[in-house]
Length: 429
Image: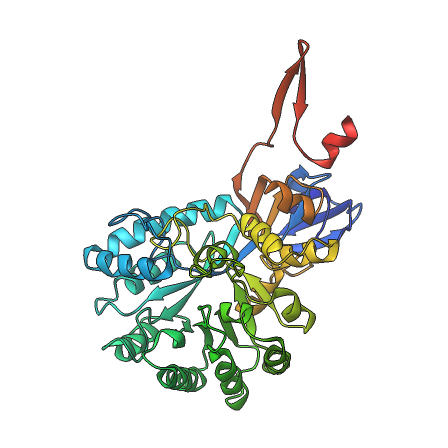
């Protein structure tokens, strides 16, 4: 007897006609023609069933504040930072909590059930830490949140950042963050990495640093981050986010850097929507793309994840926390249109961020947590192409969100015809 039985699923990778039996919040069996009864049975024939989407890089304390105190008219990183500085004194713990909880509802509806969020610790009040640690606890039945202590104004540059980061960790923040390229000097950036990595080693914590989020090819803090990872034995526990200077580095240097990153098992987190928007603003033509070297890193066996980064905040006024939109932008910017490359982009918002975040019991196999998303798509390529409807979002065996299948109607010569844009629609033609 199962609590829930999904019939006829298509799995990532292409296996079709698979039944998934769920009991006590776990996946109990995965097999074609699964025998058994269930309290609830759902026919998902022709639909892609995937583990939940994972957002490896988000700023929940900034979310949904676009236009406050005014719009970012230049669209630049620096104006976004300035706007946040103006908005920060007006914040309250409750307002941060309320906006972030609204984002959580959007996330659940989009099938994103795991989020790693950076939280600003440069405000001495630590309002964001208070709000998001509480929200993390309150949302546990429906989604998981990892929090990163993020010194937005610089770990060494901001007067109280070092003390505040320690306070944030003591308040329960999970991961140590940094922003070495925003320190006053390159030497300070290097020193900030060494201090933060030492702290992570001492406390047994993971690290996720905003690193080299600039167009300068000489911004090479990722090299120091990699070296410290190996020196301190933190392999597999460290991620570099953004790494946009890689799009400007010369190929010879990168040919040395990537093997070092692979040796350190550094995770690389790109943010395609925001990287393509904020980077190369000073370029005329030719204009750089502003994304880390996705293909080359993947080919070296490095885990590459795509994050949303911003949703309607002072840096990026668009978005609805749709990780398929993120995968689509990553696919286009990185020119990853081969079939295996498209699947890799889908993995960059599912299995790869799960690996970087160290998520246990993630996936579709017996014993895994029964958290799944049923998509109105035949495979990964169709899911990205259509930003497919999330027909069912399942959390530990319970349906917590659903949507009606997307369909349009066209009237030609007095006859009504259905259109849903899938390949099945072509076959019906």
